[in-house]
Image (cartoon, rainbow, N blue to C red; front, side):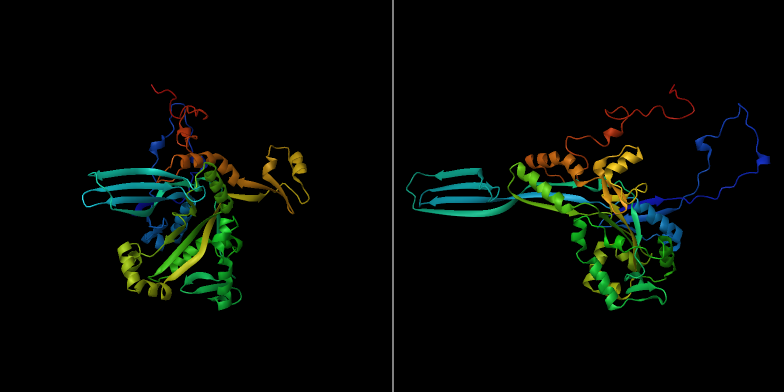
Length: 447
């Protein structure tokens, strides 16, 4: 299921002011123009949809022909970070035993279902038991059967990405790194020599940069794209190159990447909390980015649009039409994107080399949290964003309660169970909120 939306933006119009000699003086009887008296500025709309992977995709002809509109559209979508979900699922083994006795004139059967939470403590419990006796004669034979099945006991998700409060860090891949720059093969963009096809050694270098990237991101390391940024062209210039490319099969991809947390440590903390409530079944903990990890702009052509149709895309793959055209003909743009830090260390410009935390705090004369400061060769750095421990301190009780109550929820949890309601906190008068005061208008009275 895809969701189609419309996005609008307006460029700042060139403003013109009358000469000072033509201005008039307003008297007390003159009323200023009302808000609704302004003539609305026409806003071009951009059509896009969300594909099955959660990516934003646009085939809009206006975007494909106007690089300024295209760049503005991408920047707008970049303000929404990708989704990061932690999926917690617990299962246990359930064994059903069936005993039966038979004779020529009677039969007795017993069915017992036993649920086991796992081998760690060997705990079992009888789920159901039934007995059926016909007649009252001697039993001639007895049989026993058993069957195993896996039962899901808890299954819930938590949305971590709502903790992203830092601005996105835009990047353009460096010119000396092999990347797709609008052709079917990787290229370098070096001076002298200009843009040319990358040699195998350059491709191998890019592959080495990407090697183990998934594990590095789980450890909170900076993405390889951000470590190798600094390309000579800007996002706007890459949009211009895309528009100038007249290929019928092309794709501009703007990547969106979350980083900054040690997810291995978060997983270990979650497992420890689950064990503390004596759950001993099998637990799986996965961190996923099911939505919003890229923005794509593609041309308005039948073949390009066929990719958006699940059925047609399947036919193209089965017939090998799509794999062949993808590798041989698609012009790919893979040089731009944005990174979203859950937390990051930021150098404080008012610090100097040699500063330690104590001397820095005493010198600046403004309130700071020393626990968020660290000494570096350049001076003092401050941690920004939400730290793993801060997040887990808020969510630990929710994890334990979810396990104890065998919670099953398809929708990710946005707020801790029993915690503050983020939507209610926006209501005027809700405990803990600041009264907003009267709404500005012609009169503060409602009557």
